[in-house]
Length: 236
Image (tube, rainbow, N blue to C red):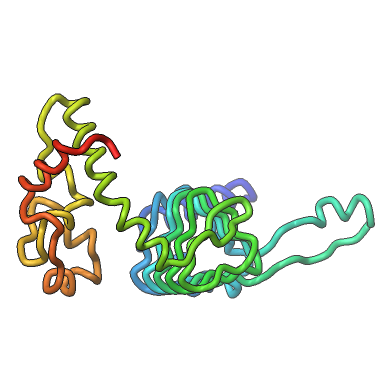
């Protein structure tokens, strides 16, 4: 009976990880607070502690990426039992605000709050609170930039990165770059009212799509002008 019960539980748990909807349903049923529009990486690699589900709160528009772990407890009593003949409980809330991007293989430990509009870098181990509008990275994770400064840095770097990419296509594939190669760099050469349906632009922009269509003016007048620029520039 014990074997059959364990097997049934295991099959049930794997069923909940079948897709996004079943996994979210499982987490909510356990008592975890989930917001709307959550992006999930490979859910079979994501580990959200459900032993104390009331301690986990995840806001809206959050990316829970592949390999992410959220823990509401630790277990030092494994060692305490042998040394002190004692057992001490250890738990704490994990709160993730709205519009938070967590890269792959992030671990968030108990007692941590991540504020709204934050970016947490690849492989980070978050042991302390991260204030809103911040970029944090490392083991342990530390705030390295404000969101505003990081946005400006990424914006300044986009054109040099695109030049390097275009030149790499020429060298590696022995051909000229095509529009469809630049499914992330489209804003350099497409005005908001001239978006190309061949690219997943609406998917990339998400909630910013309608505003972008009405307001965006590209740095280059056309893709051809952009390509001419990349030919004149060495790798940057």
